[in-house]
Length: 105
Image (cartoon, rainbow, N blue to C red):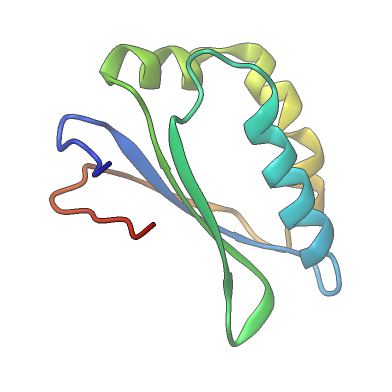
């Protein structure tokens, strides 16, 4: 099912300390299964072909209210402490909206 243009989303870039990429990917994946009802409904984690310690995340949320509640939740920040400890530099986060999307089965 394609993403809806009304769904807010984020594009994130995380660069792990050298050799910490696998842990960053596993931890980031695990954080998508915390049971947060306001968490992303659609997401994908991608590894940079030229740097295995760089993670690109694309996350989309049900609606604006869910997006705002998710990022205002202090429990979410606490869960990200280990992610921050793995990073070699400040993460990049850009808020986006899908215009076109498609999925193959």
